[in-house]
Image 1 (cartoon, rainbow, N blue to C red):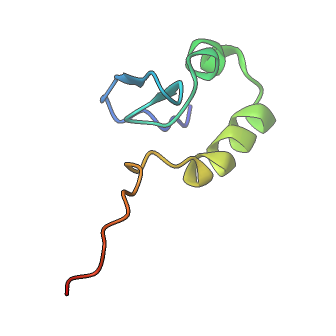
Image 2 (image 1 turned 180 degrees about the vertical axis):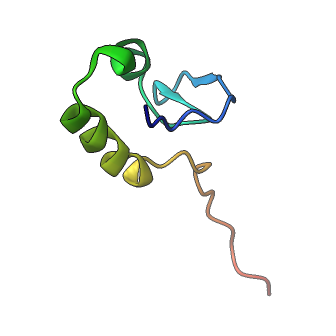
Length: 62
């Protein structure tokens, strides 16, 4: 079974996504019982889930 798990299991509480695989707790819990189509849908969505640190505006150097 294909899985996005990279063994970095830590949740980002502000986004409710795993820092390693970017799945929600619900998706992680249901992964083994999802249909192939459901898993493919989640896998296709993962690249769009941003875990980047919020950018802080920095004034230009004088």
